[in-house]
Length: 112
Length: 113
Image (tube, rainbow over all chains, first blue to last red; front, side, top):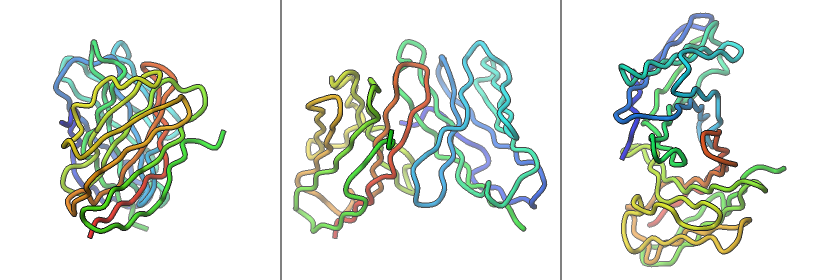
């Protein structure tokens, strides 16, 4: 069963604009991760945020975590054509922090 | 390290045949995961191992599916007999410890006709 659920399911924006994707989850967690998947490839880890953190940055990526709302967001600033991919959030579960469950992902398409 | 290595990359088989998917995790990683990805169901966790021991196989869909990890550098996922609804991309992933990133293989695209 999926723990996380991404929103929107699909997103198309112009190159240079910012892209925001959201993730909601159901149970208490120790950490939340975001991954990217290019078509036909394996998933690549982007960023991990722990439950005691509220915000984290990595290059053009900004992740926020609100444990009271059980939600997270991934912001990609100044989008590029190469950012076209599917983005997944993944969560562990408090008490089962070795198990990683993925949502269904957001398909992001950057228009030239 | 070459990363997580899966084989074969593509597999086409006839319904009823046995299929074996293989995975070599990153050296030194204690955890190994098997996922299945389809358009309808997304990325499903089938089973995962810690130090070669199966920890949770609740995602294995049926008794036709089995997974083993005979040593720290090798794991197999077997489907016997295979059915058309097993067609999917199967991913293997490994990670070093808890609350760390997982590294994925390139996947095996299985088609059962």
